Amino acid sequence: MKRKTANLNTKVKRTKVAFESPMVEVWVDEIPDRIVRELKRCDTALCCLAWLTHKDLLKALKELDSVRVVVTKDKLIKRYTKVYKTLPTQDKDKVAVRALGSSRKGYSMMHNKFCIGLRKGKPLFVLTGSFNWSASAVRALENVVCLRDPGVVEFYKNEHAVVWKASSKFY
Image (cartoon, rainbow, N blue to C red; front, top):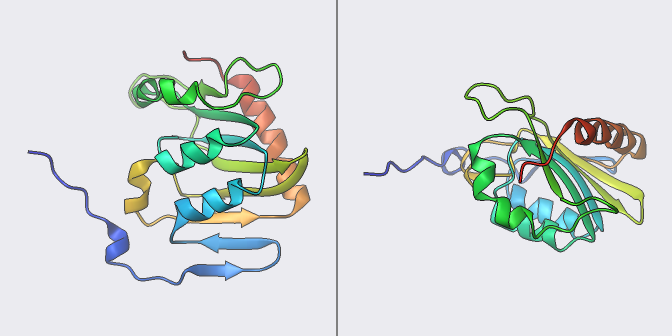
């Protein structure tokens, strides 16, 4: 018998936006919908995500011109290889999704959760926070911080480049 996972969001009532300013927003609800809205504003996404399994977020990434995503290397990613292969690659990349870490239990080097949005090479935002881009994450108490400061976005672009270089093709 399969046990149903409790949805903590039904027990905890919070405001829709915990904080908002021209450069920063903090989201605590409707996170996948908010991420999709941001992704529709850009043409390129550079992401380092522990997991990428949420169908709406995968669909939004598929609609962009180019994507570079690094995920943690574990047994779960093999189930999504077919979907990952449909994501648009960037420049000379042969794949849009690479992995970092090891599939051995308890050893995973990649646990970042950030996504950079660019339009015509110009920085729009970086999304970061506790939210895993997975189907099960919507049942947990999570947050995403949307940062629009170009300097912060540039910092994360550099971090993404380092992680991308350290990652490898897994399919």
